[in-house]
Amino acid sequence: MYAGLTSDSSAHDDATITKITSARRIATRCVRGGSRSIHYAAVVMTRGGFFTMCCLVAGCSRPSAPSATLDAGVVDSGVVLDAGEPDAGTFDAGVDDAGTIIDAGSMFVDALTENRDRLFDSYGAYLDAGTCVTWNALTPSAQAVFFTLTTRMQNSQLRADGGSMLSHITKVYRIVGGENANASSAGSCGGGEYNRLMLSMDPTLHTALRDANAHQGAMQSGEYDISDEAVASFWRNSHDLGGAHAPFDESDETEQGAPRGQVQYFADPTSTKANSPLGRLQLETLVDPYALEFDQDYDCLHSSNPLCDYISYGPLCSLGASTSGVDLFTMKYGDTHSEWRPASCP
Image 1 (cartoon, rainbow, N blue to C red):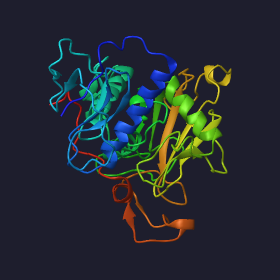
Image 2: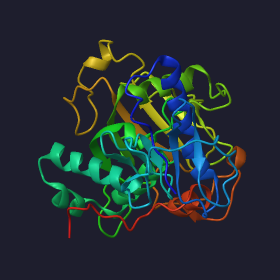
Image 3: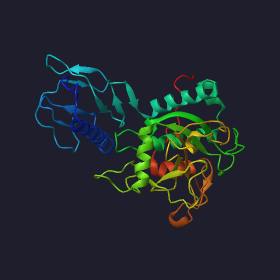
């Protein structure tokens, strides 16, 4: 169970790079869309220079790769193996059991736990308070916001490189639950400055959001610009009549709701507006052209607190049984992995 990229691939033309990118996307979907019997999928290159996918276990429905000798590989433990050839190649990219994208070139792992650790460390550093002090200061509703929104971003993938939205988030500026929330109260269910994340993204995610907005969610070459966890859902231009939240001037949202994910950002990072102080609560003087606001709307009132209970979450605002935001999320979008704690904290 291994696959690798041959060592004679140091120079790639545009067509080859396109094939690598496409293969990475297929690898991710092969694992995420396959059965639990899949152990490994990775980008491979034969000596003839043909890129394809290896789903090297029973139960994988992808076509078999052409007969060829693989130069090197990675087993489930992440160890690079020599497959018997004189010069073992270097591992380029792959996907593990959980749909984790691994880039061995930089040793970056695109997985929920690793992304949360990385980003929460950035939050502690931004507040100059340390990771553990910052985590322990969060109210339960703020923690629930972090759990649900990071899960949604981890399970939303970019067509451009197959990576998760979360892997393209570079900093956390604010994690906030309901207004006046404390250890025993979820606080407000709504509020324009509450129950959301304030983040910074990289240019790749910005471009993908702009593409999803411009294409209005339409597939491009059979793929969404940004997919969502639910099969029938994807990211597109926002249909919110209120428009983007100030000072942002562009907004995207997911096709599927209950809850519906929504982000706000600057359409043009070089604009005067994008390079002016943000003016938001606790971020009044922050200047970040790639700032990103993210929340989820659980009902027709656009309430966003995962710990509140909701009834108007059905199609066309139809009423349902009173259900917490967290339960609505997990029923449709999966486990939020709320057992997570920062790796550096006891």
